[in-house]
Image (cartoon, rainbow, N blue to C red; front, side, top):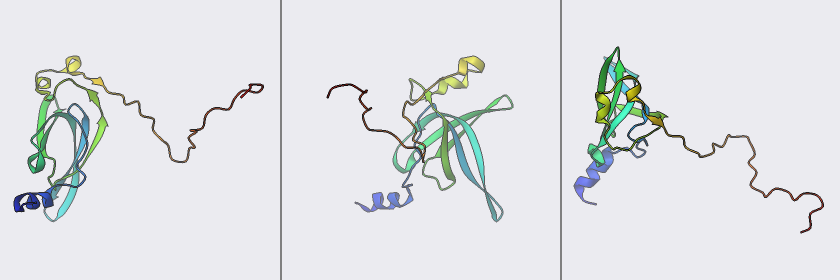
Length: 138
C-alpha cells in the first residue's frame, strides 16, 4: 500500500452507511455550538451519489415550508454521525434531478418491498420438513 492510499484509508469510515438513490433517509448530523455538541436530523430523499473513496458524497432533498432544500453530505465526514433508511423506493435512474421540478402526486415514487423474512428474536423457526399424515406409507 503506498503512502497516499494509506493516509486516505485512515480517514475512511470502516462501516460506511448502506443506502441507495431514491431511499428516504434520516441523516444524523453533528452540530457544534460553542463547547456543546448535538445531533440534528435531516430527513429527505437521496437524489444522487457521486464519486468514490474518500471523496464520495450524496445529496438529500426535502421540502420545508413549500421550498425545496438540498444538502450535500460527504459519506466519510466525521460530522455525519449516522444514516438510517426509513423507506426504500424503486427507481430506474442513478440521478433523480427531475424531482426538483415535480411536486405533489407527480413526485411520488413506487415503494420497494423487500421479501426477506424478518427473524424476530425469541421465536423458533421451523426448518424441518412437515410431518407425514397418519396412515401414509413411507
